Image (cartoon, rainbow, N blue to C red; front, top):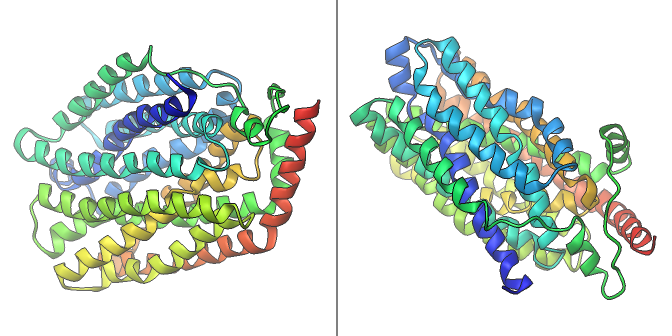
Length: 427
């Protein structure tokens, strides 16, 4: 099988793993009404369940990323898949809030290795010309996985109870992992970047960068730091809508569990499936002309998406909710396609697992770890619709950070990175 063809097969295999990753983590949100009834939980306690995953996922992400830069990415990816799938199968043993919280937290520990490892692997198969498209295509798995987790968890929950949703998703994840043991191959680190330099650039990237040295590198690379801060804001908004929209639709429009879970995810995720490949294509094109091209695509997406985030919670019409969710999903996809591709423009190959780990830490602690509980608190004091609408302001803040990174700092940081690669290739 040729290299050009196999590098896209890798994207396909990782796509399937990511699908199960997001189906597992999204299932809990569609089951909020059942859990509230069985365990007598308050909105804040439901928010804590949504945040349990994010807190552990974020806290352990830098360490997971650092480990990914030292071990085979294939081992980290498949090991994580087996771990989180097993935890999902065991989650139905929960009988109390404390037990369920512990399983949600443990699932975050299992899943924290996946994105640093998978993004690092894709970056070594896809260079500057195709990286955003590859990662944008991979990102569509997040959307379909979220749809499947939201809809099927609600559907299974209505007929068989909430516990069977976790058993089904976990079992399928383990079976798929067994299939990939022989098919997924480990690439050489830095292979795509060296290929971008042309003939004669044959030196392999072997040096490992400790976390302390990575932090010093981050301080010298302002665009990377701003990208991480923007990801925290964008992830805050995403977790607000994805965790609370099913309950908002259930309460506001009196939908059933399955329909509320489907409506809260289907329109967003299908639109994002269009936006993500489009964002990848546009970013690859703009990156050839501007060092901060990927970042500018992300900034544009968030500025355009902010009004629709506000509309999601403000409107009383189900038709306008669908329009708002669809438009937000399209712009979310444009942003998501470049989350890791943008930062990899200024971070060397031997530190990309660590970079992705820190991105996830900042995004999930600064955004996802706060959002479900914050919205629960606002909802208790006013109403859920207002809480959701206010998240639009956070999108505006993220857009400003990205615009600053792309215009002010990216030209210098990209040039600094490319000089480093040229020096290493001649060593």
